[in-house]
Length: 116
Image (tube, rainbow, N blue to C red):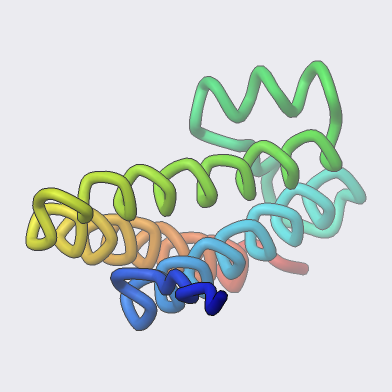
């Protein structure tokens, strides 16, 4: 008996989304770490209220886990939606990549402007 291997519907889009999401996690960690150590011109904080709550209750490790769980959740939703509506699933990943990419660019700018 041969088993058919299941594949991801949107491998390219998913890869970009995960990469940009990981960059967001890295930039968030870097900004919060430098700010906590007093290595920025001003105090920099997490602006997402839910992520802020996670950070307050579980610290930076909790924040990293939270962000990766959100990446996995969006990826799973896109794959599930894509089973019946491929354009919508692909569009969700493209939109997510674009939005998170804009956040990464903003975070990088914020970091470079404020690092001492």
